[in-house]
Length: 137
Image (tube, rainbow, N blue to C red):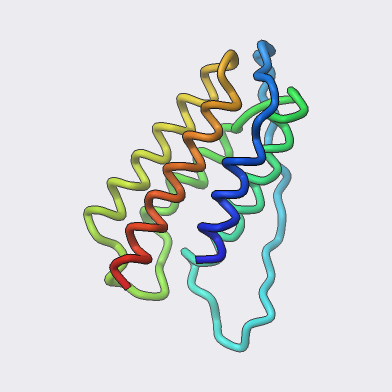
């Protein structure tokens, strides 16, 4: 739920002019740690990392310095194989949402003229998935 709220804030926060540059910058690799007493699943850790990387991507776009990297898209593709906390999450719907997200990331990467709009659509795909699975809970 918190992740969904943050992603929504990313959507509304990214309102600057788009860039015409064709630059691509890679996201910084960040180690995600958590102080929870339980072990976190591979999927939970991956989603936290993607969340942090998306914030870095937002800053690249706002500052007109770059966009989504190939490495970020590769990490999105690993969501399919990451082990979740709840194995029942890996439904055909989950896979479809992830495919939509990957496709939106590729569109954003290729469309330098509409980066802000593309990023906002990317965040919306994240929100759509999280809202769908939150409603199922």
